[in-house]
Length: 186
Image (cartoon, rainbow, N blue to C red; front, side, top):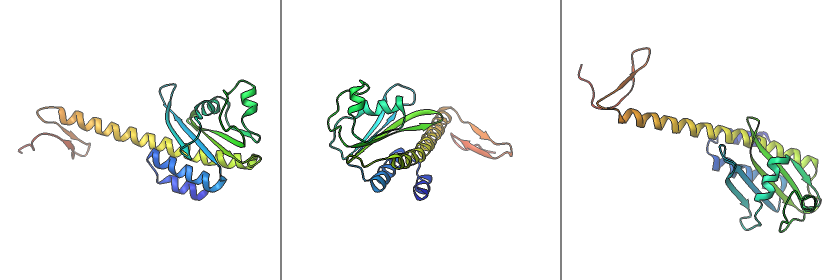
């Protein structure tokens, strides 16, 4: 877990964080299926979907359930959720399931569902998955903030470049930090 956290610490791109998480889940828990989604921050919609292996049933309804219900262990398949009406019928719903939400700043930002052989997962496996997802949630939030910073800097530079005839931004020490247009003649 420590090595995973250290590896994530230097990862500032969302796709790289997801790739590292999927690899760690496969190595640590040996699932037969992984489904993962990230929710759009400002809209009530899924923003990103990832699956392993790539050919598998659509798990969007299951991942949305994780957003509402939180972490779950389902040692005998999805049938109890289907029977309660919490989930529509699912293809390949047998096996043992672990479900965990991504949480950042007290908000659910995504979900992951993994399936293994019947009886495979218990409380210790759920704690491990929650720890991995928790660390990935922090890394994903950091990546989001870096993207916002980069977008803001680009926007600011575009505004500065568009102002005519020329503009200089001078810091408190008197140094020119950003200028556009031709160099002034002193």
